[in-house]
Image (cartoon, rainbow, N blue to C red; front, top):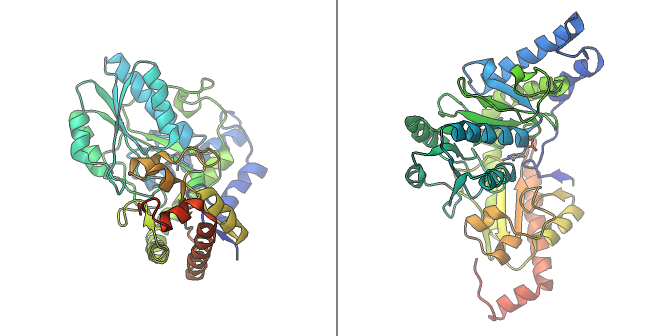
Length: 396
Ligand SMILES: *Cc1c(COP(=O)(O)O)cnc(C)c1O
């Protein structure tokens, strides 16, 4: 059996998304900035895609959507723009949290070197931010709050609407990295009181290398890329027309089937969680309920996540130990450390993220395979032997 269970890292493009890009590769290949009709057709196409994207997140206007090369660029541009607005007003304090994606964390680190002060809020053991604590952390010189909609590793969904409300009342810009949320759970920038929102097509069955940034009217974006007048002068470079068209199609498709997909995925997710919970000395990471429909993340004591992944790969299962960005490095996940997992336990993590086409049969196979592999690895593990012999104490 072949099972792709790493949909938080990237998703397979849908048929509709592939088909939507073809005309713009083969026929309508004009440059949207060109004045002749071939260019203008491409221009009209991306403007209609902009309206589609705006509608899918309930933005008031298509002019609030800026196309980018993906989630990372959108995060960078949002945060740097808000920081520049803050700096001009003498406000150089930013509030974020400890479990953000590196596209956010590394941008904040850069700003700290430039003199900004950043508060990284802790999260609860289940991976949720305390909104009272967030409110208390706000200061007169806070220029930005950036909190992700849903976490890419442990799938927890943050109280975005409440955070937006708090920020709106104080007139503080609120950005959310919604890369894991858009196309998967309902996102409404108006109701959620969001000022800026990042999304990425390849996380919702669109192509890689394209995404968008929502920016509420009145907030001035700073350019990361200087060049032509594309994206209303805020992002130079010829537009990725096929990618943009495909992204809009994928988003409509996902939004239209969201309810049915979520219902099915929650059922399969909870079945998988129940099955893996039967493994002794294991624990679910992240909140059991405030959780993305397809996300399962566990820690198993006494094993190495990397060996687990390799053996699961042999059984045809593509999983992950956390985020694609940290795997390959020996540091345990900053997200697992933030929810209180100690280093050794955090190393034995497994993330399985289900896609829209997941089946009950696959879930059964994954439960069986993970059980077998964990048992096999524990038999060879000196750490496990010490635990069983009582030389060290079980944590989970
Ligand atoms: C994947 C991801 C990103 C990065 O998006 P890219 O389009 O790959 O640059 C940012 N934030 C989160 C939460 C993600 O899951």
